[in-house]
Length: 533
Image (cartoon, rainbow, N blue to C red; front, side, top):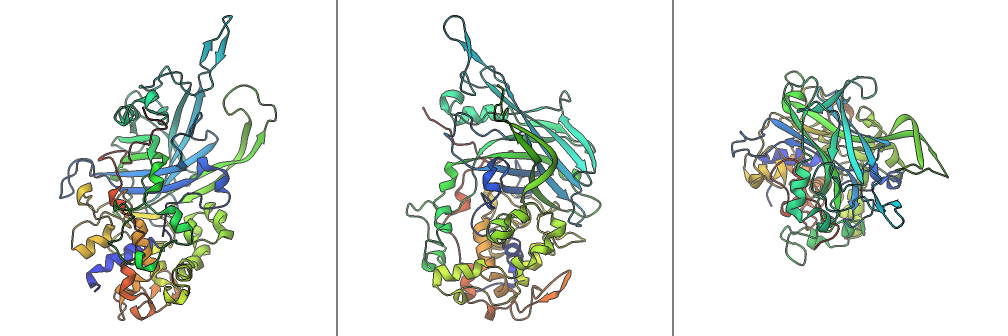
């Protein structure tokens, strides 16, 4: 396979994805496995493509969609309490719009779960509380048959997330600060078929007014079908496959349907916002960076004899402590060493140089070499430190998504000035696939991230040296150093890539483009029902 110099964006794309090689960020650190309600799994940030024409105009093209997923691998039948959000947690989406690696805008979500204490008259005129969160079929917002109503508030903070100026986001109609959340898809008897559930869920898409923004936006929080495609079990079983399979792009799973999308039988909870791009950028620079976090109170007191109520066993207090962080997919899961995973989840982008060694000297390529070829040297690139990964991973890409002033830090970056592309015309390999195909789709990963972008395949190519093959002996892409880190240099060239041109063929045998999605906001598909008629 011959690489084209025009594939510069392929190299750039893959560098940003270097840490995100094989799955979305589920259960990635020791502590977060004990607190699944605040486990961030995926973060999407893209120009909205709902209703846009082939030239990238019309529809919702002037809006940016932000989707933060939490609570991984929800079994649809996981009742009777299902997967409400944690009222003792703080869920946040952060935006850096001047490249200094610090949040300039933060959208804070807090949840309230109200128990309605629905009861039934059972003998002798005694009214007894029911054991379920529903007492019958549900079809409307705050339905009378719901025993548990979920709602939330949203604040926008300008400046430091804890010390900045905080204002309430309200409904565009009526000005209420309270936004309703749909109950999870308990099953078809309670909520109807998928079409009926989607009609019910859409009643919870709220138009919102953001202080300081002259254009209304949208917000939705609710359960969605897991949208990430990966051979999850195979990957973590020491990549239970062969190089012959992984280096042949035509290979699919045994059914020939684009891969074993096992985790799409599960659900996640999405926090989705659609905001006009003018409300997120600052000055003349169209590039924004984004990441999500979740925080818990520093202390909690457990009551061994709780009273009646909902979640009455815990009393939380003290300062907020960040326990989850996610920008690019899988950085913590497959780049950061186990001893520092909790540390990374508690960290801020402005302090990311402390994790630089994990990026410049990644262990994943060597591990892949050991499990696929029983020889790390047969697969792992030799250009250490890996400036090819660090250059784009920490600063963004010149001409693609690098801000005017870039402080090295890990976050998802998006050039809001690049036009969106209709779903059917999107290249699943994002900017890289577009470059190789000679297309016009520069609105995909790593220029933000869309649901269709196959970040797994893109990242595998990056990890195994595809960038250095493209960089060539002449350093055409400038990947032999890292802007802002003058001490790091390397020889990022084809002779240091054991797989050579084959590094561009690596894949995980699943196809992200075959995953079902909605054509518009909130984009992620209707969740799987807990039971079917």
